[in-house]
Image 1 (cartoon, rainbow, N blue to C red):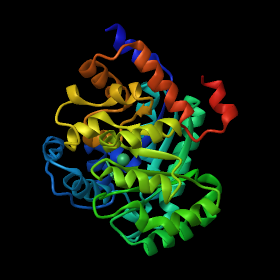
Image 2 (cartoon, rainbow, N blue to C red; image 1 turned 180 degrees about the vertical axis):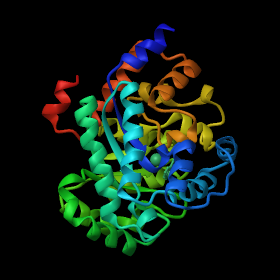
Image 3 (spheres, rainbow, N blue to C red; image 1 turned 90 degrees about the horizontal axis):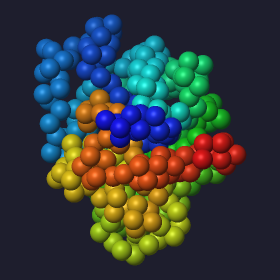
Image 4 (cartoon, protein in one colour; image 1 turned 120 degrees about the vertical axis):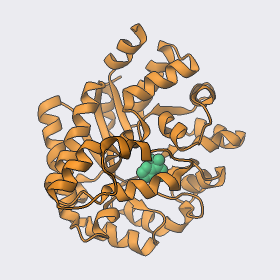
Length: 326
Ligand code: ES4
Ligand code: ZN
């Protein structure tokens, strides 16, 4: 349709993408074979059938198991190269990708293997597609703050190639406050900060992300909509929210895309963006998210243009580069 081709042709940035969540079942099988690892599935169809989640933790258990096939620098390169090719086809011209080093270093994979594989794919994306890319190092919030400090220390040789630090994994019971020290240290090193907050966790976690951590961006933020004062605050401070509709549907953050709050967020003055989160697990890349939510909520071109515009103004690109995209 017209709207579909309008969406594909709309230049956009992707700001919320876990690179481990872009591992398609086909690549999972080929990497398992290349690395001599067994996986608990017989076929690609069986893998996809396992992707029926009732909450975030359900998904995370399967996502961490899948990530275990990633072992070498080449594996991380191939993973990211496949994502950049799909993103480019979707009209993504700038991508800020998150990675979870602890998921790999805790299995004995060297931090260097992970990041060097990602960096080489990023260089290729620039050369092949003209795409600009940035790295966001995420701490796993179900682990200790001490472990996050150790990860930040491991990243030290690459800090000039890491734009921001993030916080992901199991939200409830692991509030931003648990990581106040390590985010302060990251800020001191010149890193930007983005935190998953208000996906399953309460509005209080979004307040903590702002007040205790000084977050530059909020990942998800859906539950902020429960608190009018918080909506006002996010709106007046122009805090970008990286919203992920197909993720919200798959993880039962919303019961139906027809009830997704994206247009209510925009109308409340929130700087919402559309993103894919873990596209291999949630049934679509960023273009699919635009199309699905446009259809379900009846969004018009003005909404879609605003969402794409927010993806650049909310990016961690320097202001002069943002200006080029507006
Ligand atoms: C994640 Cl959807 C989501 N939420 C929290 N942590 C994550 N890690 C990967 N995907
Ligand atoms: Zn996420």
